[in-house]
Image 1 (cartoon, rainbow, N blue to C red):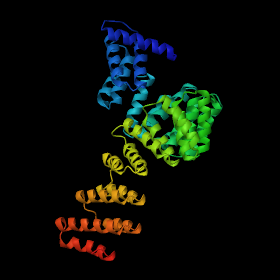
Image 2: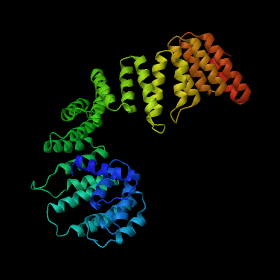
Image 3: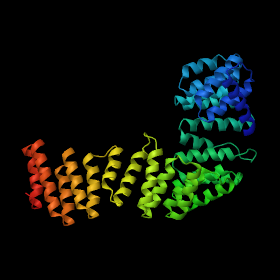
Image 4: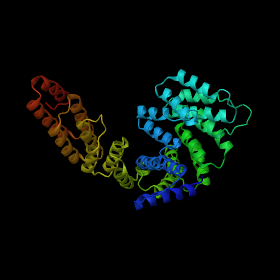
Length: 425
């Protein structure tokens, strides 16, 4: 069924549901709607569609089987298994694959292969080859990438009688996930040989080339993908990444702008473009891009602390130290220490010749957290190396005052040793 047909069926279904009226729809059409929702990650809509289909077709085993697979996807294996075992057609292809998957989900590889070979015994190509592909897909779904790669490399086709494009794709995915990028690239190349106008194949190849640090090749593959689909956001995104690593800022900027036209709420485009602008030392533009990245980056995304760090760097280049400190404190990396965040800003202010701003930041830091003797020595040494002896003395005296208030005589001795080394005590 082509995309236009499925969209019409989905539209008709949704209009009926929205109207709140009783309606009838063939089981096959309702399964197509549910599958459409599953592919779009709209699982609640898919489950509701299956529930309606079962009210209309309570004995339809294909619908019941789809329900079982949804239960399995939610890790409700016992319910799913009971439902599958209740079906009358135990020879159904998807029923048999369910039992194989159940074994693989428990990592019972020998039992799974034994069952598989029992199922395919006596089957002829191309049906036999389809079963081999199905088994490989289950292995990939569960993350058994090395087993999948070996299974697919031993694929039984030798006479060119089977369309191998999907096999190459699965091989490529297995090796890609194992980070054996040269083998992934080789399989994606063969996939493209079989279908040179498939923009998705070119994107897979570009991704593997990028991971293999073959950045110029990745850029070229992105261009081929865009020749087949000029609106491919993923191709522009990969081209942006590759161009940054290849130190081709003009290409990166063009790709980044095209990507953001198509995905204006994707934080990665703003983040990478900000990095490009930082390399070009356009820190004002970089800061604006990082701000946009912060806006769109989800709270639980690990990149968020990276973006805040980049934003802080740009703001420090602009000598906006208070804002830079806010950026660092807002979303610090998990291993960050409070003193380290303050000192990072103060250190940059000293390098920029803004000693008064550095002194304010160090004063704030000492009131909140006591640096270790080693950390205090590092700050003193940094200030003295730039000729700021008064600032170094003031800072050290503030640290020593806090030590005497909170750390005791034993700790004070370590700090006094630091002061003696630099003529401050």
